[in-house]
Amino acid sequence: LTLTRKLMMAIQQAGVRSLTVNTCFPDGVNAALGKIGLAPTVGGGNSDLLIPRLQKTIGEALHVPLHNITITLIAHHFHVVSLVRNGSMGGAPYFLRIRLGDRDITKELNLDHILPQSVKHFPSGHLAHPYVASSFVKNILCMINDSGRITHAPGPSGLVGGWPIRLSAKGAEILLPEGIDMTQGILLVEEAQRFDGIEEIQGDGTIVITDQAYSIMKEVVGYDCKKFSPEESEGRAAELIARFKELRKRVVD
Image (cartoon, rainbow, N blue to C red; front, side, top):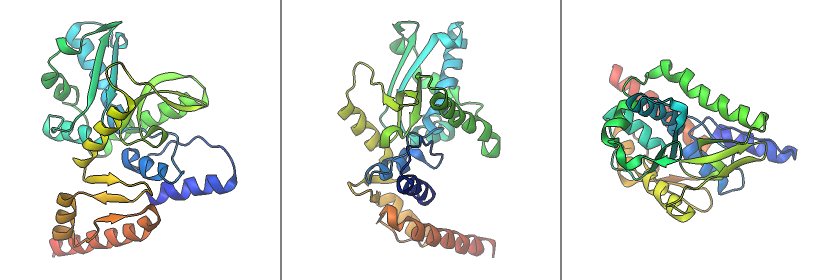
């Protein structure tokens, strides 16, 4: 939050129009900064990483080219983490529609099998970095080349979570599928972010931590922070780093 806030403030103070792709937890950071008029254009990674893997998994199962499979997804960073670690979407709400050509095949598929299968061989640690980076590069190229490509990205236009969008030199345009409106979509991802430890992002950008996450951080790390504003983030980050260093020293000793 600190790094991205400083970048967006610098752009604002310079009086230039810059398209920005935020790599720092865009599902939450873009939303918090959007509340105070500093939203990056879009993010990358996270739920976007599921799209090509789902296309590949479904294409192979149906014996069709993966580019014939269209994935429309509204989801959150939590879903990716839960899917990779636990093999499920973790009970958090999401919207998924799958089309083969122009035919909706969502209900014909066993999603409880396909979703975990799609990330079965997803690399961990630094081995995942090229996959994550490719998502950001894709979004950068869409805007540089004014492609108007229909794609997916987290944090478009200051929204929580990942959304289907059209991405061009004009920025990110939300493309809502039939069956869900903007209000429903926002409520969905705001509920999903609670599974990721964020209770809410308030109107002034203040991030409120869930009771469970707050209690764990206080007990394990000694970090007593129920909520903080974007302006406080740098001091909070320094404190959190210090707390983790203390924890590491206690564990090693």
